[in-house]
Length: 366
Image (tube, rainbow, N blue to C red; front, side, top):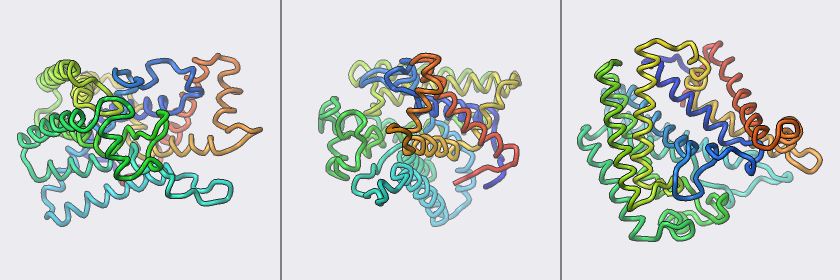
């Protein structure tokens, strides 16, 4: 736990908006009756939900623009110790979250069937690689490396597989490296949308978030900053849509076109928030999202553990999760609205915990 410092309001709110949306899309009452913007694209394409995770990585990079300043004064051994320790903790938390509730019918759940890669694991790996790159190279070099990562990933995807669910290079590497039993099976086959190979382009989301954060700090929160962020955002969106013509925008493969599109949208979003919150001081609505933004990782973990626990508790042959969704929300408000209201209930429950923590000055850091 630590005090908050070196922050600006727009970043906390941006983080909070993303976490709130992440909880909503991760916990629908009934997946079959979920409004389409709250679903991922089936394969190629893009929805609002597809923006959630890359935005999480973008704000990780944004936050790093504050913390990396402290690392510059450290020697390399201290830097690596700090970064690797944080990477290991976040990766382990992600792994334990997938292993939870640890026991099944009184027996310890086997490690051999536990998913290895996932959301927190990708955050950990992207944080580690981006930190090392940004610590040792200059800004121009980091930009050229980002371009190289995206081009190389494109070439790997078309050179070592196809762009289908069953034949892509991401799946092939994970099958060889960790085996199907350690992969995500939610798409009907063993395929992990947070696989090791697709972590390569995801590093760029963190780097661009970092560069945006440094630019905002160096240039101040003013009209010129907002305009330049929007111009670069427009350029990245245009480049992403152009790249889509030869490499489709695809969140599950985390294609290079997907990276440029999401980073462009995120630059637009942070520019708008800077204008509204930091320049115009129109912040009467912002506290709700600040609560999420001040304890981001903890609240995300809380939401996942809460949902997993609800699934693990059995009532009359069905999970407590399904029972509450069907009998408390869907039964009187219908499938689509009931599913949304259930997700909002999960989100608001987590927000209330974050609210209590904020009022008590408790901020959990890794």
